[in-house]
Image (cartoon, rainbow, N blue to C red; front, side, top):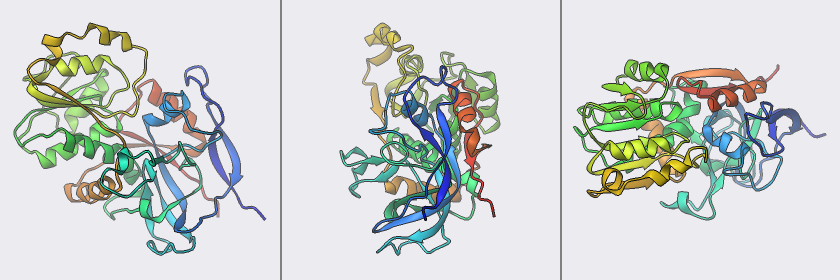
Length: 343
């Protein structure tokens, strides 16, 4: 007899603003772990902007329907043949990287498989994954706190490393959602003498940034107290890219932490001015996915640094509401879905 579970299914691509019920709450079969795979009973799954990119077709799933979700926390309940890496009952997490080559550049490999896009993810009561891409969760974090660490945190960690910052140099963060609020805390730990400036559209995000220790916060195009050696952009828009380039010191670096950008203000890029935005050896670096090592290293560092994710929780069947709020920038920290397992 096939065992069923509750899941949120993406059946068709389209704008979230035109379809506020983009995902369908449905009964689907519980996956069966194959060789070297484990089955996870999901307790929590973070909601990431990349889900919007999938739903709206900027990075579409190769086939439909699919279960989104790639910030997954749960417990191992079954192991396939040869899957002895994690004990039954162990608490583990899964991120954007579902499977790849396992080498240092696995995030750039054409063999990269994305959780919740190329294969079913964690908007469900159960999911399966290869044992090498499930990570023990430090005891310092409960399930809801741990969920955003697996993507927003992991890719934020990679972004900060790619920024090439030295202690004392100014860091800018443009956009202040799930990833930004974790990067700010990490930067405070790794670069205690570096001023951190946060650029955000909403006054609430600006206040939240100051509460977490930002030295200054203001609008996307506001003038900070000084130029930045590095800026990390986590927004889906293009306007912050132009603004960030203008805020860089000579030789500074802009790191764009986004799988995709939306097209709505893309025309602004035609106004780029070489002298104002790019001259004097400024750099632009994009972040492509994460590696397994990124996630493992960041989880340990986050526990050591005492990072405290700010989380807003929703029931699984409220995923569409969480996504709509994310689309409309009703954000304070990270959004996390909670699974109900009766009995």
